[in-house]
Length: 469
Image (cartoon, rainbow, N blue to C red):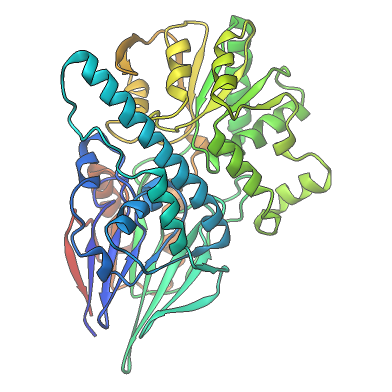
């Protein structure tokens, strides 16, 4: 058996997850993500390395844009195969892709108008990567919705099963069993690995064996804070900002992070540790995703199920205001009393959060709280790195607000949790590929795995190929 694996993204960088597997004459793409780091944005515009219409199927680990956001583009280029994913992922991907397309259309128009006023051209085309119409058309490919542990035949000699990754609602690790004659090989794609004992979701799945393993490494060189301290830190930030008379602006991913944040706010209110102040979920996408969460109680963990039984759902948080329209979003800037403002995007690369940053980032009494990973080159990364001025909506803004970052909210496993997942393999894999991390992080995590296990470990580069035999 000769199988070729090509790393077309998330190779020594964090976004653009795409892995092309060629076996038995079939081409299978695992994940089809968008690059989001500024350094790599041009890759979104490059021709796909193989003809899109030659790809037989796409297997999707979950619905974050760095894993699914390129789907409308590749469909526009000719992909007509089936997309396999869990039921929840398919529902959420529809929301994510339509929202992404809308934001791209709006950003392209904004850039065109600004560049016309300034008499210059930008670095990238002043057109969207794909339109809302493109995104709508791509949804027809989501024809294969699967359950966890269900085995599905993708092509001749290729069987797949999806296993709970504990990362976001519907997220999966994908196990591929490759057969050619009497030969059989197993390949596991970790996708993004979640954490143990976090709210709402069940723990990540462990595997006893595999021939080849692709493991993410977003936080492969660091440890998160204790989850028990999340409530203490969040309460301190909210109370001190409230007493100062400012707003708490929280850039948040619409999927999982926003819902987990509502969970903790609900818990703090039940415990009377924070004042009951307005909480604005200012993201149409997050609102829609939250509604989808309500449809999948069967995949909640025990604690979340118990809250529902007690009629204390965090999705009915006291003081929660859903702001779907632009008009309602604009009214938030007129507030005279403190509020918590949860808005997308999580890395501040687009969406309504930019407008709330304009209103608050130069106010010493306000706080900007980051609860997720900030990729290199993004606005969020510039802010958390301590830049005293940042460019928002085309203008430089002084950073005077309190800036906080809480890694404990991360939906990604840290170094020790990743090692816990790897330690479940009772026999050494033939090869471990470390992906989905910044270059220096993947190198450090490779070294850590080798030191602890003695396994064969590599960190592939962009467009590198390996033969799986």
